[in-house]
Length: 247
Image 1 (cartoon, rainbow, N blue to C red):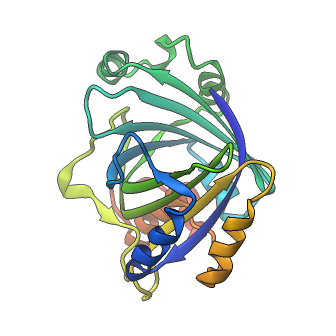
Image 2 (image 1 turned 135 degrees about the vertical axis):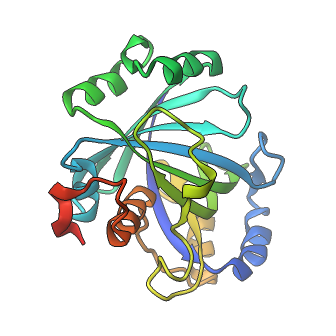
């Protein structure tokens, strides 16, 4: 499964969501899989030992990528192995879907290369010598346009992270650290991350949304913020001896 699209990110305060949601419902419908409710997502990010993908993100490299495994709270739900390429403003994402039972076997054996249905993911994992580095979880509220071929608007909240060295999508309850609270945002307010996702060009109603609510585009990398959070805290379990200059 492959899609190419543009992704614009904005920070919004939680108290603005009701008004924005009412605006969206003129043009969108709530995600059919979540019935308009928040749902949890777990993303396991891979990187190599020099944190190449993290560094590319921090440096705003015009061409960069991410490798991640995405799962959901339902243990019976399939898992996605994703490769995200960014070429300046354009994002191309490929996803290979594996069943819950297949992923359970991977988790037990830690042998990701026994899979055969994710060739691109496996190719980059092997060539970059990438391994699990960070588990990020958050809750998402999603909407899809009912008047366009493809437009999605998502909101993420309660973003948190923990270092990870195996192929786990659960982590340890005591090791989570927030990445959207005032402390991790440098003294600002807690925020929701709003993303506008579209193909080719944003429709007129997205322009209206941006102007009506005076939204200011801002970058936000969950993986990047998670790594910075653990670097700053000097977590002993997080080996970044080769990356101290990042802080």
